[in-house]
Image (cartoon, rainbow, N blue to C red; front, top):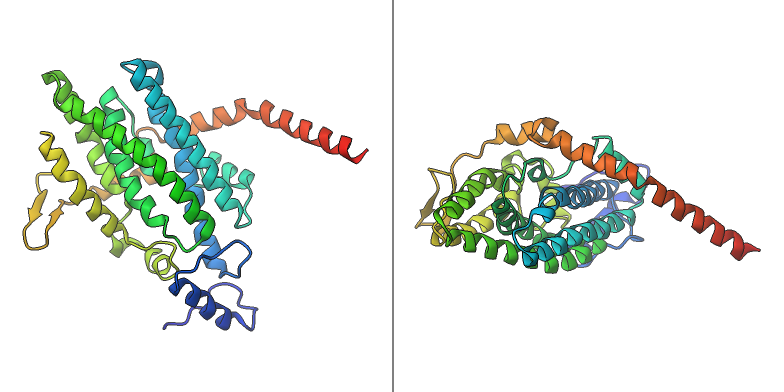
Length: 323
């Protein structure tokens, strides 16, 4: 085994601690907040969990915009429940990250200042109601592939949060699929609308899994320490193999002229992903980057009075208890 000198170099027992840490992970044990862990393990988890929490927080915006314009009361109730779920997912994840020693305030400030990242997928506009269905079926479908993998994460609080989140995301996935299939069987106008939504969301959805494994510098260490149990390309392949046949059966065609089924491997093969667009959006040049960040900044500022009131109430209760 290659020896790593990551974190705590001043600790004379570091190598012994690291070997025991990795042995625990190899045995399938969960690492808990009070356990010893390499500094880099902690840093990578804070980076991943906080980005995941930010994605849930920002992810409420694209679909939330359609709550007043839902085509029926049933659809409105479903969408309200889904957006509320996303807020709850953010809460679970912020709590999980806090167990690593970072504060909620630090994480939120990093997002609002533009220092922290969130999933690129939320920097695209939702132009029609069909977008809401495509997000539910495909975007949440890709998210589930990643999240079920993270439910096996070696860090206990993250793993347990993901188990609960995955149960709710499965509902989101099913309602999105139902909405898309209804449009696919609908009028010519409805079929055109849902195909247009698929055309716009297909490549950003494939990008959600992250860069190819050869271009993902964090992956080897994340796999070694059990933070991830599958690579980006493995997750993307699982998504393709499940969703492409279902889309084609529904009469919908992914906008990839090179998409094909490989008889030898039993897998669907996609064409070149437009990674230039991926990096452009990551660097803040996507269609909705500025709008999404401004919306979260505005909401945070408008909620300041609630936080201040809660803090004042808490201080008063503490003072009364001390008397």
